[in-house]
Length: 516
Figure 1 (tube, rainbow, N blue to C red):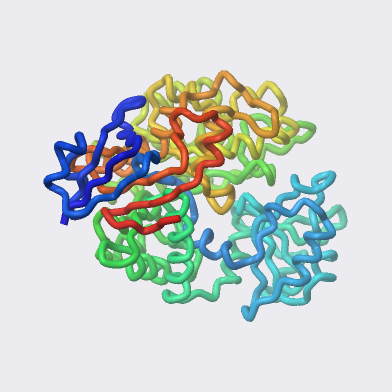
Figure 2 (spheres, rainbow, N blue to C red):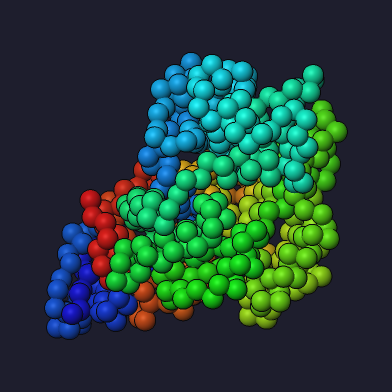
């Protein structure tokens, strides 16, 4: 059965403004492109685009899909801007689980960067409660949560994290990085079946936004790694819910996952590089920087010693694997570059540099010479820039998110959201790349990139990251029949209209998986 899509503006992404008149698909791939008259005789079914715009489906190269699915049914605070309303929602939140798990707290949404503390949270609920900060590197808990884990003011901080204490040495409720991970692990009550429901819920939402492929990191947060991995394998596939995932493998479970020798699903559920964390985030001032934060002696949080970081890289190399490293501060980036230069990736593969927020010029020069790709989150710049200059100063702020410089150096970058840290809508990220604008302010405008290059990061370049550039990211013969139909011509409308784009239809593997 062959299907012909026609009567629309069909962008191939092979070159700027490159279009075809019609696309013939068969058995999940593009059989041929050309004119309607040329292809109609070979078609069994016809899809009239009615003048709408069609282009390749989009990829988000860095997100947390299970958390997206969970967030769609849990309490999320990222859009709450009133302190009283926030407290009201926390107090009213009820579940039948042992812990309350609340997402998306952002002190920057509140007057004077208000941070709720343990005493205030105790007044709202006596059930063990974790409120995760928007960055997912920190959170705040109540006394019941500490009691559940026998944590007191005398408990030692874990390596790579800490329990915040006030001037009297009392716990404030705030926990950071490895300490936060301990608290989050305690909230887990998942099964393969429940995670399958979370995955399906998240996937359906992503499909509605035109996303057909997500690179996600979920295998270390929901009990034994088999639980989330089996949930993915049971839920997605050519004969199941059609969606493509590449699973980054957290450093804590990497060797177990490799040794398990699971049977994956080619082009649908595939294992990817070892995920490593080098530092924290700017919001919690745990991003590792080479010079102290403003008005402070603090340089952030170094998750691993140099020796441990090198050991992790070597472990990946023994398995002919790449690494994918979370790095936000310039010192963290420097450490990672040192390690991967010392222990190069196997020929034919490339390491992933994730976030790369604060990039000094010398670091960019080193990156350009390495077999690496960069997972970038364009909306980080519009989220961070209104306040991050206060943390690092104006001199360093000029080196934040230098996407145009990286592009000019030939560095491959894939577009992503880090959702649910940021909103997953890819058109918001594309708008940020094209404008670097938020609420009338434009940040480092010399780093604006072209519309076509912005869309490439979610299509053509994203496919290169997972070595599928010959079959994914374009509308061309032999490529996956993964594409989207949009309510406007995103290549010609104003930049502000791009972020308002609505997806009318999403096709994956030749099947319509979403239709408005």
